[in-house]
Every structure is written in structure tokens, then in C-alpha cells.
Image (cartoon, rainbow, N blue to C red; front, side, top):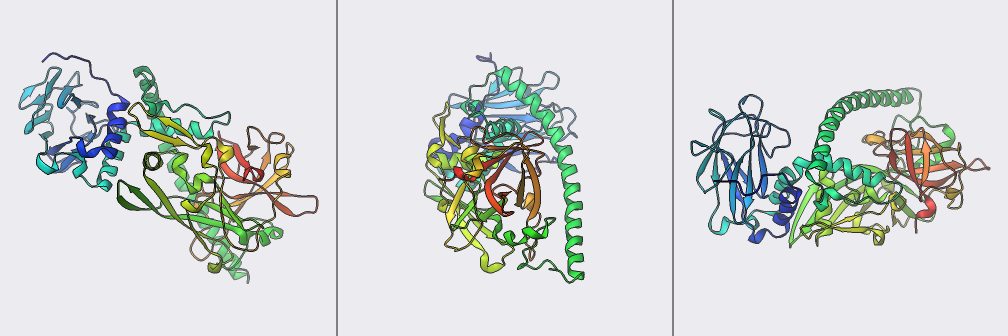
Length: 488
């Protein structure tokens, strides 16, 4: 069969088709690949449901159907299965190893029929191609939670790092909101190739960084436990939950600590199309009480899906932006003890949702994104009668070189059961006043988990007043702080 159009990997065939399966699955056909040989990633007899219009098979980590390196005659990108009208085609991608359909080599491509046998190279892995019939023939027959899982595995997997890189740039773009071309499906082949090369390079770098971070964190956690043990031996706090001693901070600051909270996402509830699914929460952050009773954090702690930096957050955004509902349930604890705990949901938070930017994909779906770091704030009315003093006027009039104090729970440290104690750090103002709505700092000393925490300035009376909220890191050393005056 002659090839009518050359095969090319497209975003619409992956992400666009995946979204179609999520939101319009009742009329969309899918197929099953039945694995007939054991491999590292698949067992013989395993059935793999495919809900998108384009997948690749091979040894590359971004292939939706992946085989391990023990299959030496399977190419990195060996073959593809793509939708052509209302039919499916098998495309041979390898220039060195053959692809067989029912025992015959596929020169370029060939249409598939239910019951066909696919084999990647002579002696390589075999798969059966099955199109379900009857009441099991459409994607809508697959449960919502299963579809969500398949969407992540198949639609997002090939673009995981590329999406992360582009969305991080989006969130950290101080000069304004960038265009999210990766979801609009407008990137051409050359751009995709550049992104993929950079993605592979970043994957290698990130793996090394994660190994180092894990090793360092273990050392730091051990050191903190030793410090608490020594305090206990000296008749100090011993790390009890009712103690307001902060890790590493001067004693004069301890009276402020009872108002600085460790926030943990307990569960995420997703509702779409009349179905509701519940998932465990996987992130944490910092929050704090103000003297007027507001409990404040960063919006990207309360609603991270509007600041997506990975596929899980993007996944929630798609639901929240297309008629679904995403609600996270949080618990916040402080050194003030269990009586000071605060429970709330993302739905209860007050923030500037009206400034969100809506983007339409070429497949007609909506993505909503928070418009800039300066709007990265959220709060609830706590009903509590005491908290931290704040100075909105000073928050927009800081001088270069002024030192600021930050409290929070970086990487979850300081939040161990029974000893909630925030970590102390300092940073330096690097630009006069505010820049594009944020306070810029140098020698950043805060990490993931500090987000939403209070930033203090010591006034002329020697008192600490809150002037900002920790938002994000910019580059390797700079920090972005939302002025407390930004909260409306």
C-alpha cells in the first residue's frame, strides 16, 4: 500500500486525541494491544488499552509501548500505530529492523484489522491488535479514573519534559504571560525536534540533581533530628508540638512562629461528567495567620493546576478548565499545637481568579492559566483573633540590600510528626521597590515547600512585620516575593 501522507508525530494526535477521549469518550473508538511475550515492562497476556490516535512502539523512554534493552533488534522508535479516518494503520519507523504484520514485513505502512498479529523484528516481541465490539467498543465504556490514568501514560508521556520546561518558563516569566504553544498544537517539526533534544539533555541533568538532592536532604534531616535531641537533653523544648522554637533562627523571633503553618494536601477530589474520583494529595507548602484573621498562602499551593509545572498539575487543569471541578482538601499545622490546626479546601480560598488567561487548543478545549506571579496569593477567613502584623506600604518601598527573613517548611523539613517547627532563612532585596508586581531578591535561601510562607522586614522599632509571600525561584539564585499589598 502506498503511503498517502508521511508519518509525523503530532501534538493533536497525542494530547488532543487524549483530551477527546476524556471529554467525548462515548463516541470514540479505542483498541487493545495484547502482549504475547514477557518483557521488563509487560507480561504475556497483558492487555493495553490505547485511547489516543497515535502511539509509538520501541525502546525509547517516550514510547507509549516500551520494550527493554534485552530486545536488541527492537529499534528506539520501531513502529507507530496511527488513526487514518475511521481505520488504524501500522507504520514501520525503523530503518534497520523490520516490522511484521501477520508474518509479512511492512515496507512502509498497512491498515490493521482486529485480530492481526504485530511483531517487532524477527524473534522480537509480538502483540495482538484487537478492536472491542458491542457495549465495550467506545472509550466511554472505560471508567473515568482509568481514562485519566491512560491519558497520563499515553498522551502526556512523550511530551512530559517538554511540557514541564515550557510551563516552568510560563510561570516564571516576570515580564508577562508567554504563549503556551505546546498545548495549542502549533509547534512545527523543527521546534519539536529542538524541544526533544533539550528534553533528553534536561532528563540527564535532572536525574543527577535529584540524586544529589536526596542525599543532601537525608543529611539535613539527620542533622535537624540531632539538634532537637540536643535541645531535649539541655532541658529545652525536646521538639514537642506546642513549642514555638524555629529551626536555626534567633531566639527573638520565636514568638512569631506559632502563626507559621505547614500546609499538607490531604486529598484531591475531581468531578467530571457526573463522576467523582478521589486521589491522595502529593504536595505541601507554607501558610501564615495575619492579625486581621486572614490565613494566607500562595495560590500555587492552593490551586497548583493553574500554575502547571508537571503532567499531574496539567492533568488537573484540563479537568478544571473544561467543565469539571477540582477541589483539594488541606490540613495546616503550626508550632501552636493541635488546637491551632486549620482545615480548609481550595474552593474556600479567595484569590484573583478573574485575571486568569484562557487559551483554546486547536481541538477546541480550554486551558486556564494564572496570569503572572504578582497574583500568586490566596487566603481564607480563619475566624482566629490573632496573628502577624503586616505592612503593605513598606512592601512596595524596599531598598536594595535590605535583609528579609523567611520562615517556612522547605521540602517538608520541620514538619515531622509531633515537632512542627519552621525553618529560618534570609534573603536580600535586589531591586528597589517592586518589579512587574513582585519583590526581587538575590542569594535566595528558600526552596519548594517554602511557597506561601511569610517574608518579614524588621522595622525601626525592631519588630518583625510581614511584607510579602514566598512565590517562586527565578534562575539559580534569585527569588520572587509577592508584596503583601497585592492581596485584595
